[in-house]
Structure formats: C-alpha cells, structure tokens
Amino acid sequence: IGGKVIDVTPEELRKHNTENDAWMAIRGKVYNVTPYMEYHPGGIAELMRGVGKDGTQLFDEIHRWVNVNSMLEKCYIGQLKSEQFFEK
Ligand code: HEM
Image (tube, rainbow, N blue to C red; front, side, top):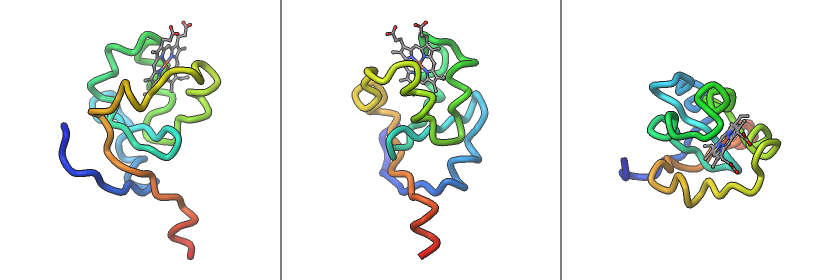
C-alpha cells in the first residue's frame, strides 16, 4: 500500500465488506483495514462490524481515544464522499 489517494463513494465503500477486502470509514477518512484485521485487540468479529461502512459511531462507542490516523496511516485510502455531495 502507499499509492495515490482517492475519493471514495459510499457505494464503493460498501463493496469492500469482507475479511479479505475490508474498508472502513472513520471521521470521513477511508482505511483499508484488511492488514490490521488479525492485529485488532478487540478481535476480527468486532472489527468486522464496522467494515464496508462508516464505522465512526461503533468505533467511538468502544474507544474514542484510539488514534486511528497514526495507527492506520499506511492503510489510508482517501476521503469519503458524502451522499449529499452527489444529490446537488
Ligand atoms: C479494542 C483499534 C475498530 C471494537 C481495540 C484496541 C485498539 C483498537 C487499539 C485496544 C484498546 C485498548 O486496549 O485500550 C481499533 C482500530 C479500529 C477499530 C484502529 C478501526 C480501524 C473497531 C470497531 C469495533 C471495535 C469498528 C466494533 C465495535 C473493539 C473492542 C475492543 C477493541 C470490542 C476491545 C475492548 C476491550 O476489550 O477493552 N481496538 N479498533 N473496534 N475494539 Fe477496536
């Protein structure tokens, strides 16, 4: 990983919803959490609950203080484009 940064639509995000192809949006940023899966201290099943979608709320309910940005810097894919953006 470490290629170019892209904008991710919610539709595209939803496609990456499996253990072997797992993307998650947190605070507007989309991460490829696939390589992190087996290292998540809360386990795979818990992490999977937020995969393919905006996991911010789930994330914050458990560990608001965890710094995703620094932890998953290399897994950063791009900004999540809001649905609203396309309605205009
Ligand atoms: C624990 C990171 C997403 C559920 C943890 C811990 C870290 C972490 C560092 C250990 C925290 C500590 O011991 O203080 C991450 C990252 C995530 C993520 C980087 C996103 C990419 C999620 C999601 C859920 C979740 C979406 C789903 C609800 C949990 C649970 C624990 C945990 C249940 C165990 C808490 C405990 O046993 O005290 N996670 N997490 N995590 N995480 Fe996550």
